[in-house]
Image (spheres, one colour):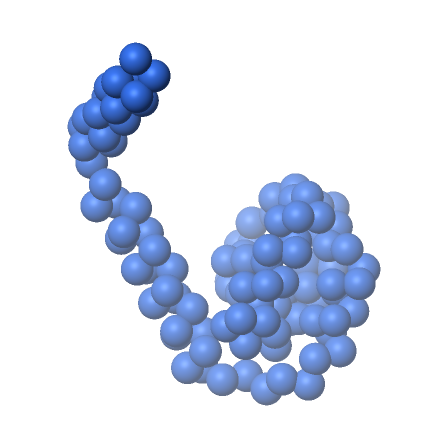
Length: 112
């Protein structure tokens, strides 16, 4: 999604191969954040990319949208991504190990 949104850079990175499920998830995010105009531009910019194999039905839905660009929607999406990544970075590996160690003990005690 990031590559499709940021398609105006001089050195575009190729699209990564994606399954239909991933393309559907991208479409859901696109519509949830009202980013259709940016994704449509990205689809046009990457049209010749070998791995641009978005299902035709999704591509048609995006291209047929009459939604207008709204910079606020794009900023809201990037804020969402920053917050999501921040939440993931707050989890410490040691605390995860402790959590799973306690979970195993709990499950073991229940089974006994």
